[in-house]
Structures are given as C-alpha cells and as structure tokens.
Length: 392
Ligand code: EPS
Image (cartoon, rainbow, N blue to C red; front, side):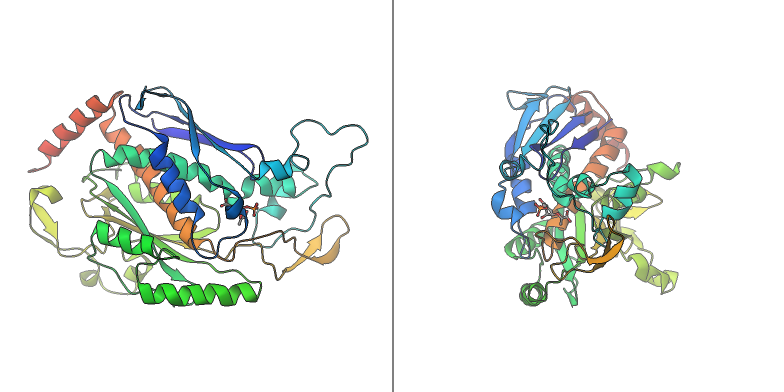
C-alpha cells in the first residue's frame, strides 16, 4: 500500500517523510519534487518566511541510480530558519538556570492554538503551533510530487488554479485543456487562470495587507487522464470522492470541498445535473463519452473516465497583524491574540498543496487497483485492465 508519515516542526531542524509502497523500478530524482516545492513557496501574499527558505528535498533512501528499489523512500526538507531558532527550539534539555524563551500564552482564534494546548496539556502554545503550522505542507507537496511521478507514467496529469480570493471570483474555465490551464495559472502571481481577475486579486491582497487582515479563497484541482474505475461503491472508505475529500480537508484551513457542480446540484432538477452519454471514442471507456462533466469525474465513488474536478475553500489565515480579541491563558485576562509574522493570503500555495493531496489519494487508489511490486507488473495490470474496459 502507498502510505507515508510526515514529521517536523516549523522552526525545527527539518521536515521529513517516509513513503512506503512505491513500485520498484520507477524513475525518481529530486528534481520534480523540488519544482513543486518551489511552486508551493510562491504566490502573491506570502509572508517573510518564504524569503528565508529555498525548499528542496534530499532523497535519503529507497532510490538507487535514479530508480526506486521498492523499499521505503525517505525525503528530508531542511528548515533554513532553524539557524535563527536553535535556542528557542532546542532539542536538548535547557541548561541549569536557563528559563528558556517566553511562552506563547494568548491563542489565535481560528488556529489550533487553544484546542491543541488543552488536548496535549502544554503550557506554551509554541509546542502546538510548531507542528500545526502549514509549514508541514512542504512534506505533503514532496510526497504528492512522488505520487504524481507515478501517475504521470500512466498519462495522468494534475493541474490547479485559484477560482476565488475574497470577493474576487474568476470566470468559468470549462472545456480548457490541461496545458492551457497549467500555463495560464502558472503565469499568474496568484495562480488564477484569468488575467483580469488576477490583477484585481493582487490589488485586493495589497488592500487587505494595509488593514493588517488576511484573505481566504477557493482553488480547483483537475486530474486529467484518469482511467474509469479508481475507487469503489462497495465500501464507504473506498469511495474515491470521499478519499480525495479527506485528503484535501487534511490541509490546514480547508473548510469545504465539492466535486463538479457540487453544492449547486442541490438547487436544480436532475435533468440539469446528470451527464448524459453519447457514443464516443474508446479512450473514454466502453466507447461512450459525456455531453458534460457536472459530476466532476466521479459517479458511485468511482472515477468515470472524465477529468476529476474538485474545489476546496480555504478560510483566511488565522494570524492577523490586526490582532483579534483573545485571552491570556496564564493570567485569565483579555489580550490581543498572538501575532508573529504572517501571510496575507496563501490560497495560491494551498492550490499546490491541493494538487499534491489529490495526487496522493489517486496514487493510493491506483496502486490498490493495479498493485504490483514493480513498475513493470503495474504496467502489465494496467494495460490488461484497459483492454477489458474498451467494451463491456
Ligand atoms: C509556512 C511557514 C510559516 C508560516 C505559514 C506557512 O512560517 P513562519 O511561522 O515562520 O512565518 O508562514 O504558516 C501559517 C500561516 C501558520 O498559521 O502556521 C510555510 O512554509 O508554508
């Protein structure tokens, strides 16, 4: 099974992950991983931390001569900022008489601070925020990059774009090709495929920064080239939409997910929702095609051969320079919430993390369906299956 664990604190020495279940014989280098790590660091509205870091992954195990061995792959992403935090994030016990750094005791509304402090019994919010930080999404992007390398060998491509930030929403891009969508989103400072909306979003982020506030938004992830049949209707936890939604909801600050028409499908009759069939080419599966893709590429918890289209909404970042009202848990008195540095808006970065999480969920389902300890075995299973579904 394709599975992984991540570890690391935001200002600790490094972030790490161990990935298990990759087939042997799969080409893998750090280059595509680093490319996605760089994309995650970008986006207009990011904070000062991204000027300190130049994230890159070191492959520490599981690869030889540029190919996976079938053994666990270990990736390490170092935190450059660790140099500035060595005392405050010291791993060893404090020397006698050293009181250590001042504890963070005023929780930020909207962050893991309060619930994390109570749950783990800490008296310093730093012990919570260091791991709860979206810094950890760097490891998710690294794992996602590996998942996408595997899927890419089977013609599956994952692209994202920002469709809303605050009050500014982009027009629909239905019918766009993967290449067009990628190029347009990549060319935008906020990963928005529409140039005019991009400009308005940049102005909105500037305005918001001046007010010391933060902004959320919505991004869309599209997976092209999926076979029919990933996921299953037979068990609740095998449904591909459920699994992709869980993967996306695991990203910090994500508050909702929808596929295809999503929530709008509750407002109109079935004739305006379901995607009618028409005779088509075999590439779509069984010689049929759809007149639309309102389902977002999944029916009955299974990929249906159309692009998987999923959107996620990110709430505004919880660290506001215009501090929100809170309580100092040490004194019990009202106090402005803790504010270090912060991003004004991280939706463009979250879109890259979203691509990674969709990639991970799809790679897991792909590996379950086609299995194989080696890439060659996986390919054989995939080709054999593709041959069966050309005609029922
Ligand atoms: C992040 C690094 C963090 C934050 C952000 C995401 O760096 P620092 O805490 O040093 O500024 O910029 O995390 C949060 C917004 C948060 O609330 O934890 C990153 O690398 O993505």
